[in-house]
Length: 205
Image (cartoon, rainbow, N blue to C red; front, side, top):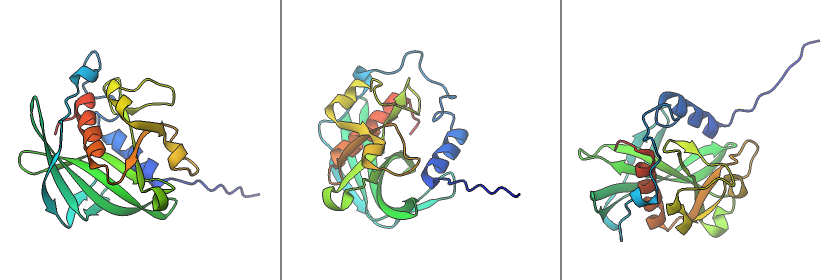
């Protein structure tokens, strides 16, 4: 008797696995400080200023997935160490069980204009009514590792709404990790989350 078995592979989690395998910082194999940065090490601007709006900006991920952002909004914020420059791009992907969903990607913008994606905010299950989005919180022990429910988050996250990711994006295989929730219009929180991630994880931008 021939035994057949069907295995469901979630595209979003597969892409995360590939990224972790190819990015030493993401999976904790890369250099990290002996003691993870604390809240005192996180510099956030008092305000963010929108300085530019672009259209049709494309970004290619490590798995050759290409996003086209419409629009792509660029912000600047003053922090003690200099000026933070980040962009927020809006796109739609077919990532959750074949269903198209809105994503907001926050990118660091380098001195030469290069982009590095830092945070992904995905439309929640009730997006049509609430217009909320959620991003996984990383930075455990100063790396790209995620936080389990009940684990202590970096102190900077006390100011934001955090929940178990599956509570807002529920499907078989959904993450049982902590995510940050905000409204899609709350660009300040998106930008601050991304900037905190850069500093907590020691990302090279």
